[in-house]
Image (spheres, helix red, strand yellow):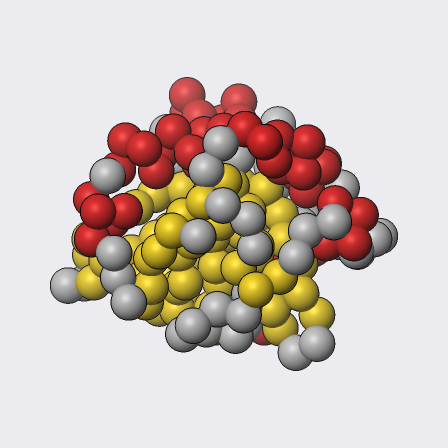
Amino acid sequence: MKNRSYLTDAEKIMDGIKSGAFLTVKAGDAVNTMTIGWATLGFIWRKEIFMVAVRDSRYTFQLMEKSDNFTVTIPADNSYRDEVMFCGTRSGRDLDKFESCKLRQKQAIHVESPVIDIPGVHYECKIIFKSVMDSDQLDSTLEKLYPQKDYHTLYFGEILACYEN
């Protein structure tokens, strides 16, 4: 179930990510969502890919390492700005973000991780590759983004579904 218009409207999608999107993952009985503001949408290995970056200090990282899938929900507008901010500054280790923000989960179609049940664009992705960033390979002008040396792991998810809710 791929809606091509949302795969090809990169400018709209990138603007949504810059404003903040929800990365959600389920591993076993644990489910968490976090805010992402960096991602890449593209085509590699003959597959449509959504790449997300997660620092190993994040609770979501622990779940990503135990899962083979994730979802990304990009809100349709700014009406979820407070929830996006909350999920980007609070840890799922300490509280249930869904309960705190009154966010509902909706069963995804192709993956175990749920989507956030809000108006917006939803991506369902299967992790097909991951790579820990090697700081020796990072352009020196980008080091300022990592003052704590807390580099990302990059998760490449094959897009199995993309749809608007």
